[in-house]
Image (cartoon, rainbow, N blue to C red; front, top):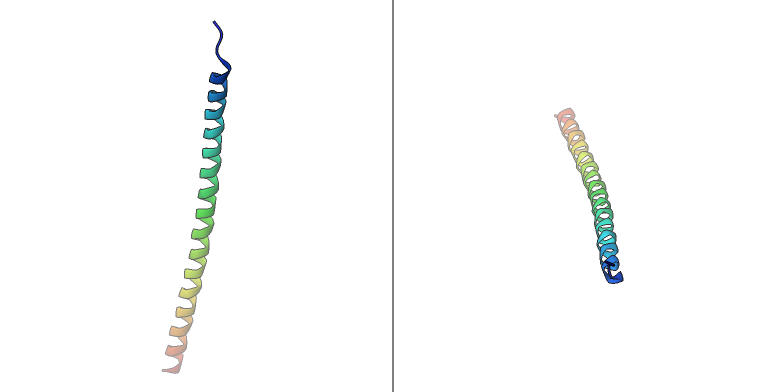
Length: 61
């Protein structure tokens, strides 16, 4: 009993699709982590500026 060629093509298509989904998921997670890190750095800089402003206000009082 032989298996038609189109069935092999379908199986290969499913495997390729699964690999591409995994690759895309990893890339999206990486981009998301980079974005979170960037936002965290911006937040920390803002906190540092606020801290400096408070120290300046205390020094002038």
